[in-house]
Length: 302
Image (cartoon, rainbow, N blue to C red; front, side):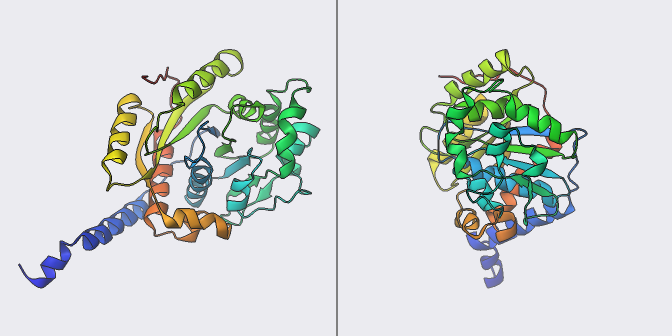
């Protein structure tokens, strides 16, 4: 075997060739746009699973493909707002004013510098007290849905992503009531399915009593490390339990993905040719191609 052929067979050469193949496939693909607005709540009661990261990067990837996308930051930490480069200082009009003070979304929405078609309704520190303030309000579970329906009657979006806090309080319930689809990020680590059964039961309760249109449509596997047997076991287990909902795209552990928010960017704009960026673009394309899926009874095995 020649020296050149030996170099072609090295792990690094194969990785570079695979990245080039994926970039070419994405460049050649035309991502379809939905006929009506698809509204996703991105939720997982377990923290640290890549929920906000997935919200931001899927939104950015879809916007780059030509869609008009709205991100609603419903997490008091405001990390999605930071990553999308929008102002969310305490005095900034935000989703808190929409929920508590009946301010219209049109008055608080901001354009993200990420992409021409990407907007964000930011979260500020005031949202931390909204759980308590919502308790005494009329139709407390319906406030986000009412405001969003009014806004979508005025503005046209292909996708809406609602980023939730990692808990099941009134903020998350508002997100479930406002959406038609639930996207659940699951990390490829030990105890990946821990708490998922309870989350699915809670979603079923919301569907039964508050939002009959709600369905778990998408499961995204994050923090994947192909070098470990554990990550591959988790992938197999999740796909076995949720064959119809789980995306084929896998989001890898990536320094670039972790770095991007500190620059007020998604990884799509921070390093568009990185494996993490390509993976989120592939996941976004898969979501778009699958379309809004019919409601199914999703259950997890204990």
